[in-house]
Image (tube, rainbow, N blue to C red; front, side, top):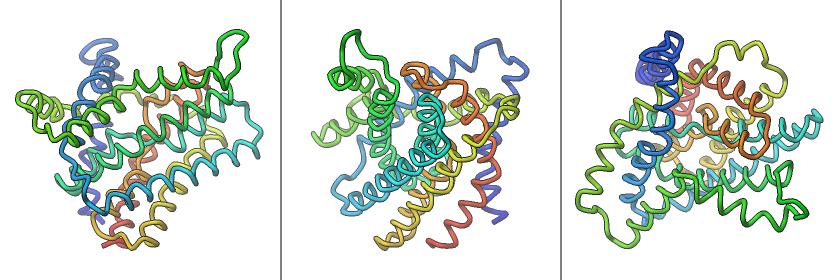
Length: 315
């Protein structure tokens, strides 16, 4: 376990380094906010495009892999909705709890997959991201519009749904990059002269810069506002999502690397992009900011232990 912790530790040292730089306002005010935008709009889409354009979709394992992750998403969603009903929280808080429970930090998943399992692990993690990112965004947008979304005056939520969905999905660079990468892959155009080389170069910068930016977004003062909603959303993120993945892997007899990479999607904290979606669709942005910060800090301690346990059960 000590060796595994040393393997995982560099990822989280980058997170802590980013938080340290932000505290010093180094190299300048709002610099890391710009890096975060660069990662979200350019670097991470380049990484997803580069990897999805090379995925082997003929692998019979991929259907089982998608089933495992989507089942985990479904069960976790049910748990969060049950928790919000029992605690009688407001709709904006409930949607922020849902985001904290089902979203995963793609940057950390990909960084861990390549650090722990090399190129093959990265390819499987990209496949999981290709399955979950569109699915999670569809789920969240539909849920948030139904719960508290803003609709045109004198219009119904049902009538406004197609426009809201299409607008949100078309503007999502992660979904667009996955779609384009898969399209290029299926049509047999990959690799594309020059384009593929540029995407590969950009993808190399994605993970270290993204991890520094995520660390810079963590606000330690958020600890003071932690409550029961954080506990429930964290149980959904770290326990329910992970447990369902583990049970599904056992049921489908998935072992080794595919199971280990699948487990990573339940072990990492929620995504920082949840804050932007909460602001756009009327969620409680202050709450989700707390959940993001605290889950990220918590994962520094929980991920090494959880990865070790997944190795124990699936290797």
